[in-house]
Length: 302
Image 1 (cartoon, rainbow, N blue to C red):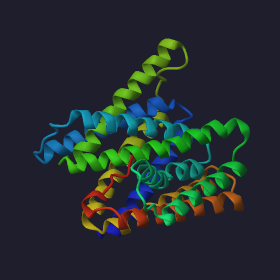
Image 2 (image 1 turned 60 degrees about the vertical axis):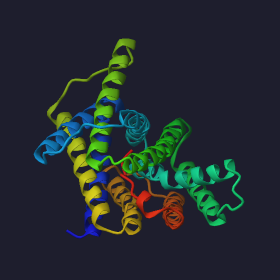
Image 3 (image 1 turned 90 degrees about the vertical axis):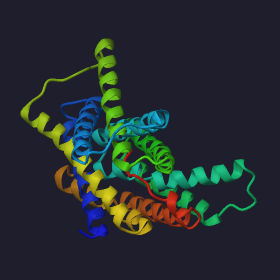
Image 4 (image 1 turned 120 degrees about the horizontal axis):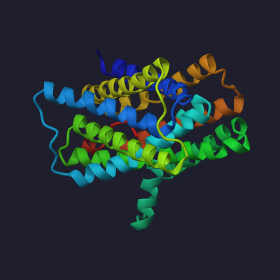
C-alpha cells in the first residue's frame, strides 16, 4: 500500500480510537483506559517482536523512562479530555503538538542568544494560539475550561515526547521497541494511578461488561494498528508529506463528533480548527526546512 494511503488509514484508526475512548469513558476512568490500552499494546508488540526474532533489550533504559513519563502523562490527559469534551475539540488540542514544538525551537533560540529567529515560525505559533482561543471560547462553558486546559497540556507534553522519540531514534532504537516501552509504561502508570485512586476512595477499578471490555480491546487494537501503519508510512514515504497528512485526524474526528455524539458545530470552532491545522502545517514545513533529514522522523503518538 502506498505511504499516503497508509497514513490516511492510520489517522482514521486514531480518530476511531478516540470514539472508543469517549464511549469507554462512560464505564472507566482515564487511568484505567490508559492501563488497558498500554497492556494490550505491549502484549501485541512483544508478540510481534518474537515473531520477527528481534529483541526488546535496550541500552538506553533511562531515555525510555523519560519518553514514557512525558508520553503517558500526555496520553492520560488526552484521554481525559476526550471523555469530557467534544471529540474534535479534544483531538484538535492534542494536535497542537507541532505548534508547541515550534515554540520550543523559538525558546531554544532565545536562550542560546541566536541572532536569527524565523519570524514565520513566530507567526505560525501565534496563529495556532489564536485558533485555540477560537476553539475553546465558543465551545466550552466554565466547568469545561479545565478539561480544555488538560487537552492543551496534552499537546505540549506530546511535543516533548516527540523530541525524546527523535533522540531515541538517533540512539539507534527501532520504532517497535520505542512503542513497546511506551505501552509498557502506560500499563504500569495506569495501574498505579488506578490503585492510588482505589486506596484514596476516589474511584479505582470498575467491573467489566461485554460492551466495556469490547471498547477497551478496540482502543488497544486500534491504537497499535494505527501506530504500525504510521511507522510504515514514515518508512516508505517522504517524511514531510506524510507528516502533513496526519491533520486529517482532526477532520475525521469532526465528522465522528457530529455524526455519533451530536457535538455542536459552530463557525468559530470550525474556524479555530482550521487555523490550528494551518499553523501546524506551517510549523511542520518550517521546522523541516531547518532540521537535518535524519531527525525529522517522529512517532506520532503521545
